[in-house]
Length: 126
Ligand SMILES: [Zn+2]
Image (cartoon, rainbow, N blue to C red):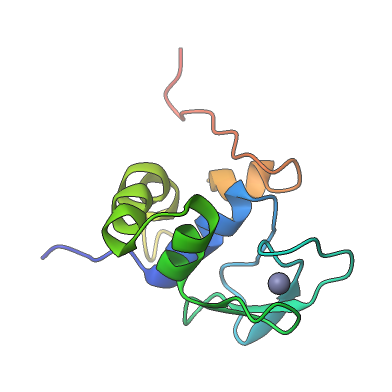
């Protein structure tokens, strides 16, 4: 069984690379600063569970692929490649399901989100 990487997790990971922090486990819409225009007060809305994004100011709207296409100026295939190459590691199994408590493993998007870049220390570094 191959588990598809969750689109919501990809969206959260992508927004983290843009310095936008989203709680990946929160249901419903979260207000965030829009990545599509200069946004001083949050005017965009993200649903991390559904993986959808919508800005009420500039109408940038869609899923993670739409945002990557907008941000990088690529087509869908390009966005898909970027998602696989750059986001999958962040979005893919951040913690084993049912492993118990949260907090031991900190996904990189959480560690670096406020600085806008994921900083990730491999657990087995020597
Ligand atoms: Zn916007």
